[in-house]
Image (cartoon, rainbow, N blue to C red):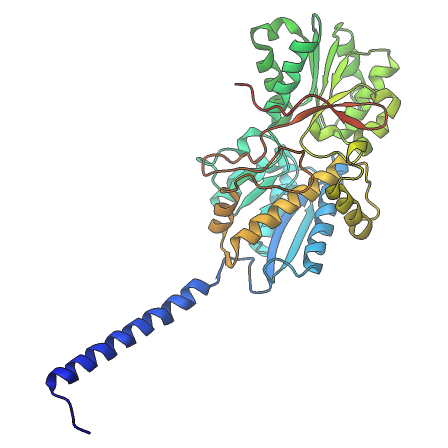
Length: 414
């Protein structure tokens, strides 16, 4: 065989070098596309998630929230985990005490080295760790509180709420009062913290300039108070025909019962955070709770209209297998299931990029995401400038056995 001339040799070499260069590009690109990225708390086999919950103390009815999440993540792990990784859910008791929350969260971040914090319960407790989580750049995700400060991505880009805004919920009650109560005189009771004050601010905002004359009495309580009987007596003495009974389940139950004991029968509102049949209304007496109004964004397990709903059927099966001691009449058990499903969605979307930045990127780019148990028409939506996933609610009235929805979905006032 004859050797080619110089031009043939140069041409062959040029073609060979181009082929090798292209192959090198492909070799580099393939690993890059499949590259796994991890921050502390994530490995090929595990995702560590940290949580604090009041399993004891004055807000212990909320402890069921953490118990549902333990069961939910066990179910996910039994199904193979998330992209092949099991969730290691570490939940600690902070007894609803902010100093204890700080201690527990430092342990979760610095010792347990969780990838993210999830659904920590309470407004004051979360405020205590707000700056810490953002300084450490640890996702503080789907906070179990409707305080509006969780929707501040400009100043706190690592914190995101999930529960609808307390302010908007208060507005909804105020708008209903103006539209449906003749000559309203409003008495307000609230927990003396940021969450309680925000409900009241929203309620008064809806009343507008009339708030000063319509709101005839206000009383607050501390979460450590043994009883609120004196506050209810004070409010009833004002002659109010509307009562915003704002607080946690223990105190809402006390106020409902005391109001009926003294024969005070105003139009009564309780916030969604205290609307659980199991935790609030049963202790108060179901007969005493008839006619009370709340706002909802989830399918309430006690509402008979959902008895054959596929999502509630799946939830009841989950309860039977993973939390059999839990109550199927507890709104918090539906809430906790839905918020846990929301985290699973975010983690699935993150794929193999389990960095804290990507977790927040996925959480802040949800577009009409459907999550089990949300009311029809409600979807999760967020953006880089909007960290409030749920923006609508619907009013419901207790009929002595269950909550019944009425009206249509309502959002923030224009």
